[in-house]
Each structure stands twice: as structure tokens, then as C-alpha cells.
Image 1 (cartoon, rainbow, N blue to C red):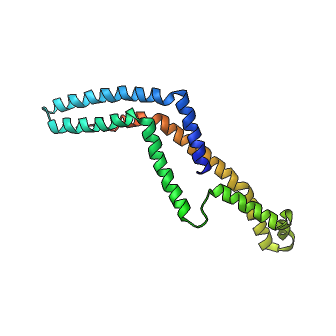
Image 2: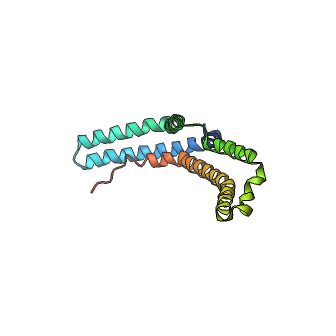
Image 3: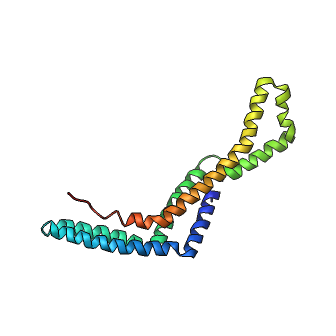
Length: 178
């Protein structure tokens, strides 16, 4: 499992233990019920349109089932995408966590080139040595920072979606007609 997936699962566990999702789901269920009643009224206003009433009932039933098991449904969908990412990762050459592999490669490169002697190209290699050393230093500094930022933003986005998504789901069945 990738580091950012572990971080996101930890965040979801914290959100669940705080009860934020349960409150958001309960509010969304009340709004869903009000929207269902509006859909029934809209069907009546259309002259008793049974097709619209049936479509409204099916949409609200499906979203209601998702709302009842929201936490499990969200985790299952997220797990499905994680499984696809894991499959892609293991079916490519090498496999493994990119960050862990990068740290291993970095350690091997530093140890095999006697550490600081790898930067001697700055003095002896003219432009190519400067370019190689500059790119090496950028890689040493930039990749861990960007990976940490990606993990943070992935977790932040997922956590916000996990808490706010019930409010978005309850809006799906509501139709606007002219």
C-alpha cells in the first residue's frame, strides 16, 4: 500500500471516530427526504405523471441505500481504485512504492558513488558535471517535498469529500424542470 493511501485511511479512521460523517449523513438523509416529497409533489403537479414518479422513486431508493451504508460504500469505492492502482503497480517492471523505491535508489547511488564524491563533477566536469550535480541536488530536495505535499493534498481532498459527499449525493435525484 502506498504511503498516501495509508495516510488517507488513517484520516478516515479519525473522521469516523469523531462522528463527523454520521452527522453529515443524517442531515443529508433529512434533505433527501424533503427532496423526495418535492419530487412526489412535482409528479402530482405534472398531472399524475406515473413515469416521473417511478423514476423519482428509483433514484431516491438508490441514493437512500448508499446513504444507509455510506461509510462502507465510500471505502469500497476508494478500495476499488486502490486495487486498480495496485494492479497497475505490480504489473509494471519493478513494482513497489515509488517513494520507497526512490529512497532505496538514492541510498544506493549515494553509497556506490562514495557520497559527496558524486558531486565532484561540479569541479571537473564543466557544464555536464554542473548540470548532473544540479539535477541530482534538485532530485534530492524536490521529490520528497512534492511527494509529501501530494500525500497531504490527497488526504485533505479525500477527507473533505468523505465528509461533504453525503450532501452532494442527496442533490443528485433532485430534478429541475421547466
